[in-house]
Image 1 (cartoon, rainbow, N blue to C red):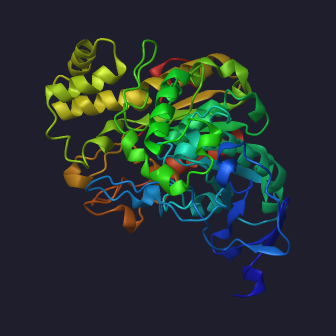
Image 2: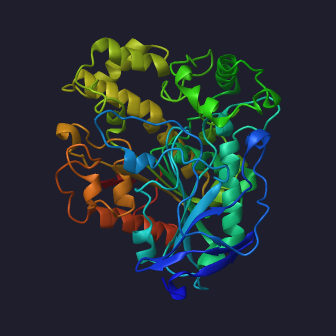
Image 3: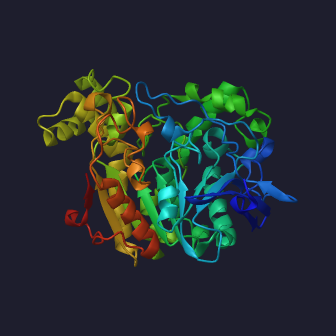
Length: 478
């Protein structure tokens, strides 16, 4: 490859060499913080020591330690990526830009999902070519997961994975102009757990000035654990590992053991006298906060940030259909889900069923899951933000139904991502077990949704009216 196709850019830590092709320039695995090894796994992210010469940034790097995720008969590899790729230097990001020049283009910083325990910037769904085509610089990043990222440990700062995202945003502020991006026009967007992290950063005073727009796709403004709930996870983790539940006690445990302990934490009862489990037992890790983000928007940059927020119409199907439990659901299963999130589970289950008089038990169970995980918390966040933001709140619903798994997967969690990234025609997303199913997607839907996200990154408006508590202002994509 000629020198013209291996551009070099200087960052605050040193020079990096990327690759140029028809989609623009891509720089991979650029460190934004020092490697979180040993005791440093439980410390705030530290500045990277830098390097001499030119660092190769043409290939993917390491990812955060994480378990393998299996979604039964559905191929979720495009979402989870390669899994754990060993290497200490994994607090890195990828930059995909039209050109590393002085054009000052809008920047989008994407925070991946994965239940706070899995995922990486390398997932195939996070393809930046459509964004670079449309004049946007896309940054995707890794952050600490699981025990290292979110276990609430005495003697260590809380929410270290969130601190990592904050450090990456500071890197963007300081370095992105060298990649052709405008540090004064950054949109922070995330999906699922990543969206919940975005919501928390809206309430974080240290994030003020680091982004002008925010996107929360299928996240929650009420998805954080209380300190009491987090302490239960910490005690259980330490007991399984046979150590004291402190930063010193955990410092010498290898990452392999942190990953291996995760299955033993499944099914912990995190309900307390004052809080339900916001993740309905699906993950033992989340943010740990004294107040939910939807109740704390007066403490961060939210008033000066435009927010685009939405959910899919059948979010809960992902947790039932691929596993074969959608069709086998009974009334007891419906009540069991309601018991995780409602004081009177029988009344909650009956109310959800009454709203869907022709629904199966599986459909009601899915609806309860989707509302508990994403719907209620997104609605509260939208309402709270609309009351304080000077720049607007924009709400969407995504209703395209994937025909995967015999047509039952539907408008489930993660299905909107190929449309936002405008890659919905990619063959690897189709087929009976592909995320989008065997049938073609609606003509123009991906371009319309992607274009709305690009417009939002450019000027803070996706092209429809701002939300004021009126469902008439909700934009539907289907």
